[in-house]
Image (cartoon, rainbow, N blue to C red; front, side, top):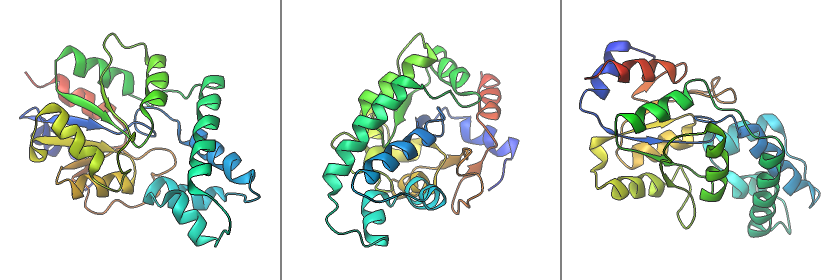
Length: 227
């Protein structure tokens, strides 16, 4: 469903707890994820295709298993590639920190200032999220639920854990996502989902989205108007 100002206002009126994806929604870190995975696979002799990556890894969430299966890669260890990728990603982020997406710093500051319940709920590791959040220079650090020990999206585990962390029922929450895998995770957790496509996902479709926004700024403006 495309952007509709009245629909957005209605979704926010009862101050639902907000679950915020991180990569691609709050920071433009998806190109760094791609480069880290590219290097991790290249060490074993496989070169990632950028166009395939945006679709399978980023949008659909097929991940390492999907790449290995699709290209019938023999002798590739999912565990080894994930560990290698994690180390490369952390190093690349330290060298070239990803910039925030438009409206992200304003949204997080507004949520903290209004004491609006919210959680960053991401497929990334908490340590990497913490490092990138420091770039936003927030006055108050948000609650974070990372993929550490949980099944990644499109599995609903991360969003169910976020709801439990706040003591909320999923129906009383609202997810903000930029990928189909995140949308599917939200729907599986029975949480309404607003999609804010990022640079790598805006050309894709999002069937089942509650609402689609061009960026985070309309959300910030709508929240400011709520008493």
